[in-house]
Length: 137
Image 1 (cartoon, one colour):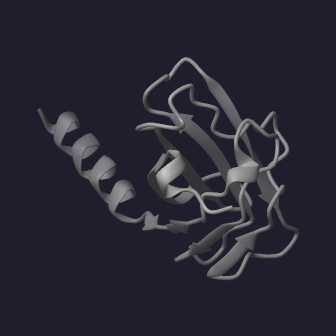
Image 2: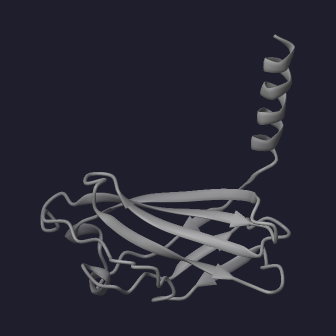
Image 3: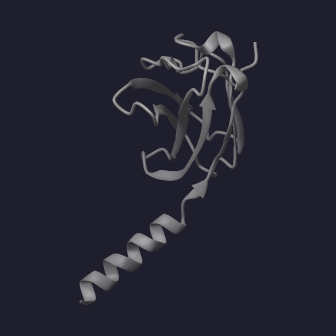
């Protein structure tokens, strides 16, 4: 019983120590089925972050791999950071749902912040529906 309590307290403390990263981006038509990632605007990046890992997932077709990418730095990243358009290179493929003209699919970007030892400092995500009515030209 004591080992369970200690493990439980350790797990709770490590989860509570992680920061929440705010993620934002604009849905654009040119990103549809393209290997060009949108500009990702991030804030709340934890102090001591040397790497950001990004993955995009399709909630309506989880078997579709949309890849992602990472940003690595020799110095700690600032608390606000913009990953430029096209900045994700690891097999990234933009939203490509077959029902784009009607109701679309829900896509989510997941961002994880790591320190220099690759320990997780924080996480964030943002889910948006990618459909014609929500996309800017």
